[in-house]
Image (cartoon, rainbow, N blue to C red; front, side, top):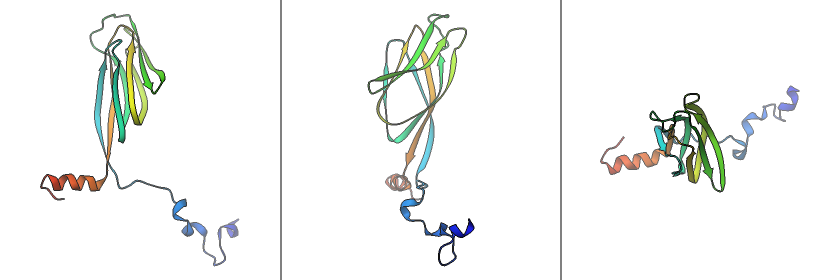
Length: 146
């Protein structure tokens, strides 16, 4: 089996990978994770856009502190394009918070809505990816170099 990994010159083939076969790592980008949050009122959808340099990571859906209906059922929904998905079902006094693990990238429009009586807070992180050259250009514009 070891002979199969050797070529005619006795070297292993690991050092002869073509560039097309090499895994691509984007080590040249700088990522800045920021806190992100949004409160969604019942029957009042909120729309946001995530561009190609951003990633929205949803971590939690929670009922707000003041409940319009303490026993009410509120469904948090996500609409991408023409499809609508339920992200969480929150029940006052029983299940008031739901952990999420959802990454949204490069979407033109993302619509969040709540069906039910209570407001819901979505929280997570907005990750911004910047090219180091863009950072240097911004520093130069500010009169800083580094």
